[in-house]
Length: 330
Image (cartoon, rainbow, N blue to C red):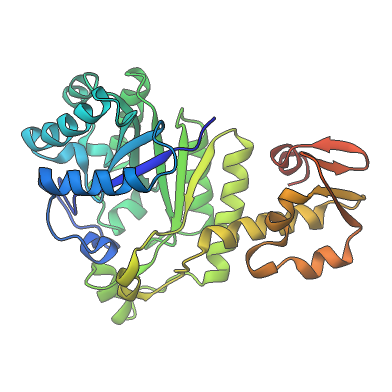
């Protein structure tokens, strides 16, 4: 399967009826207005020119409740993307939205477009957490939107968060378990980070909210990633993605530019700890096992590990893919 290339188009807070406690898309993206066609083209061709391959490109609308936009505005952006697809410049459309803005009328509009994936901003399957986070939806909306997308045979992913107000490990694990039982194609999970000019910043400064530590969030997301991947679903992103100067808008919380690498390092470390047999690792996987800034080097030096030119991990002469090894030993 060839690599997917994403062209992001940001529509900050478009279609959002409420401001969630953790959210400020202006702080997160640096964009302050909806792009007009010439700006869309500027972004599109800049990214397309940069990509080494041109045959697996997707246009993605982020930073908004996309299906909560005025219908003519939503169709404007869908039509723009669809034209690029029909002209052979892209393969599909992706966007993020909130569960309460998915209904049968929306589904009937979407079926006329090449929608590749919709990311539902579920955040939690706990009513109290959703309310405390000032989310615009409740659990009923979550269930209804998932059922509509499954019925409409539209691929979707789920976005979960850890460390939200009134949340805890047990609640978050329950949300992961419920997500696994859906037909979601992908998952995205990241810890709550406090950004400037958010309601959460106010709560934090008033000592009414305490964010997770980086270590705690790495452990949680590693636990949940293992659960999700064992179910056969794919985690497509770990942690909050910030660009350039927007990193300076982090007030507090477990933000790290290489959060995903830290999670992968932790998972590889657990795998090594759990294997008490001779291990031969393909040289191409050596960086993955060494981890971020070679954090696992001490453990590797203590283990009976060798490297060879090949494809699979050998454990006592039995070959496993990396995924198979994780499923067996984690």
